[in-house]
Amino acid sequence: MIQLSYSTFGLTNLPFGEAIDAVAKAGYAGVELGFHRDQFNPFELTDADLDAVKRRLDRAGIAAPCVATASHFFTPQRPHEPSLLTLDLAGRKRRIDLVKRGIRVARRLGVNLVTFGSGFRRDDHARNPSLDPRELLADSIRECLREIRDDEDITLLIEPEPGMVVETLEQGLELLDMVGSKRFGLHIDICHAYCSEADYIGALAKAAPHARYLHISDARKGYNLKIVEDAEHLELDLDFASYLVYFPATAAFLLVDRRHPRYFCDDTPTAAQRARIDGHLTRAGVDASLLQLVDHAGLYAGSSPLDDEIFTYLISVPGLSYDVLERARPVIAFLRGVRGPALVHEMVANTLTGIAHFHEIPGAGTLDLAASFKALNDNGFDGFGSVELYHHVESWQQALDDSYRHLAAIPQSA
Image 1 (cartoon, rainbow, N blue to C red):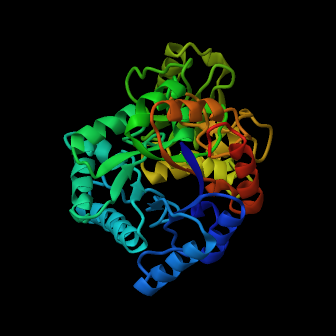
Image 2 (image 1 turned 180 degrees about the vertical axis):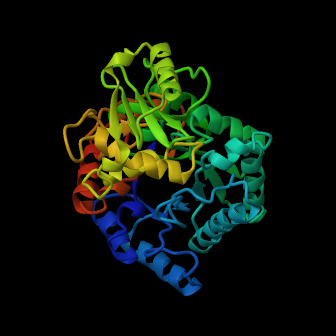
């Protein structure tokens, strides 16, 4: 059975106590307590603060099923960093410390679950292929688990997420086996499964017996775009995605797309560069005569209403430096029509299915939540599912109410 909850990560414009009250007033049975720099900061919380939160929960008559050690906590423009698989030990220790603080907060509040994500392969991982990010991740998790006492009922949960080292539910289950602890379990985000699983209903059914907790939101199809670094004989499957090929020697980008190939550059390519560009296009089945050159310096690089979408997309791209991703930002804005005609009319996506990883209010996308809930319930899931809508902080009341109205009407959802 799924009990409905709501994450405070979607209520960060409110004082923390008011966020708890708002969730209870909307009818939810639980509230996920999410770390946040300005709202629920574990580096500033005292025991007295946590005791006040416990009293607030009791007065509101609402449960706190999980503490979420927010991936976005440290540096706003580089969320998820540092992660539990960061190569720099100092960085890993910062994330380990945050997860351990989550365990201590959970202990004080009587919460049984603490959740986190694996993190991304970054450019330093690409430069050091002999180091296995999964081994670093497993070692970091084992260190976090040492914080849990033998006599307490607290479980750490891994949340697979698009683009991360642990991206699919199967990878999550493999990590559970790798770590090998009864204190370590699976957190399913239904939206993430929709983004990452060819048969997400089947994947939910398979993972349900191993899951302790859910995140719930909606999503829809996007324009699947992979950013990759130039290499000899790149294999570009345009039936899977379009590609933005990055050329380190010139910091230029080639959009490999059947309808509108573009080369974003500062200078006209040399004959040798043009031959390499044409080679990529031809091997991908794109007519090289359709290529148009775009002056990168002339692209609009300011703010726009699509900033949240573009930011969410770029941070999901693994294996490249943040400088490369920042240089790609105005290219994505150009494609989406921020200042001019749009070449791409759907949200940009970097997923295994082409579904855009952008959390929508339940019922506002194309995810079959009723079938998802049935697959989970029929295969033994019993616990809380928290709505996570960090893209809707400004319209939090509508998101809170509309989500409950839609989910409460689904059979066996509450």
